Length: 98
Image (tube, rainbow, N blue to C red; front, side, top):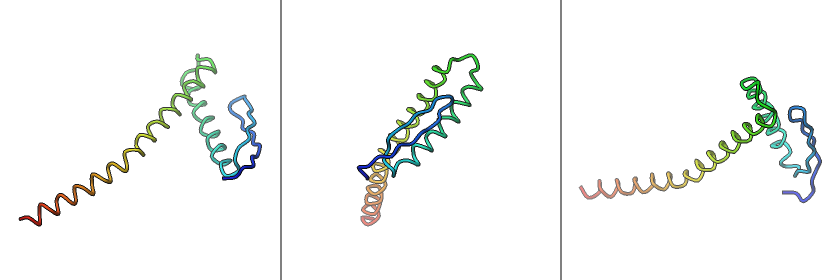
């Protein structure tokens, strides 16, 4: 990871934002900007009477739910692997005692 930052500018709906980011994360920010714009447009089409603020809140909520869901799933992966290993050992021991 680099200590130097680079400025990037993203356009989110009608808003423009300039950020100082690590160069190795620039593409992630750009991909996130594309995702945010697509989600905003979908909500805008579905909820035509909502204010832009409400639409952005819906986008933010969807992003947060996805983040927490992914984090929870990843945190369970090592446990699931360990359970499978232990099950294999138990089955081997049971089979060797027969």
